[in-house]
Amino acid sequence: MTEILYAIILGIVEGLTEFLPVSSTGHMIIVGHMIGFSGHLAKIFEIVIQLGAILSVLVIYRSRFLRFLTRDGWNPRKGLSGIHIAAGCVPTMLFALLVHSFIEKYLFSPFTVAVGLVLGAILMMVAEHRIKGHEAELVQDVDHISVRQALYIGFYQFLSLWPGFSRSGSTISGALMVGVNRKAGADFTFIMALPIMTAACLYELLKNLALLSLGDLTILAVGFIVAFIVAYVSVLWFIGFLNKSTLSAFAVYRILLAIFSLWYFYL
Image (tube, rainbow, N blue to C red; front, side, top):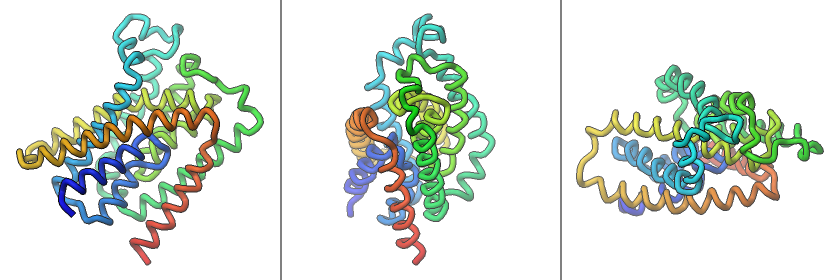
């Protein structure tokens, strides 16, 4: 395979999985191992294509982010505000700084990813079971989420630091557990994810910038564009899916993927 083909494959994988509750990190680790794409370029490439996926969320929710630049955008009594986003983001960002080195050293392997996939699937099934028969009582719109609920959803985001757990899987499940429906939970998850993911990506990019060469720009650009386009379509599809379906199918998929990865790498 050429590096351009690697870029297209991994851009598609990143775009499809970054905001679905299936763990993009887990998929990138598994697929990266399978095709043998590793080393310094692979590390920088994964950061850049993640930025492409992040840009898709900024475009989709652009009116929300523009509102955060106004005074009303920071008033928690007037719908989703910067206060809600800060409540969901800040604890996770601080915790991530504490455990970042440990996670990079010990948790980036197909085995730990498989464990995260299964545990995340269990959390999703537990959350779905908990709300069964009570869905009408849940918060139906992201503008009606309380700051306390935003904080609690942010705590569930801690779980996503384990590769394979999935940010959206953790936080949408957390939203269900604290009384927010799937669609509102997904909207909050995607909006909240942007500052965290952007900060993490820029931090990693600055650390590894010296390893980048002009010859790498083509593959990075291809991966960025592919990830942006695929993530844009994926997010819009997923929001529509949650209006009429549960997370159960994703839980089953995660368990099957965990079984496959264990078989492929260890048997």
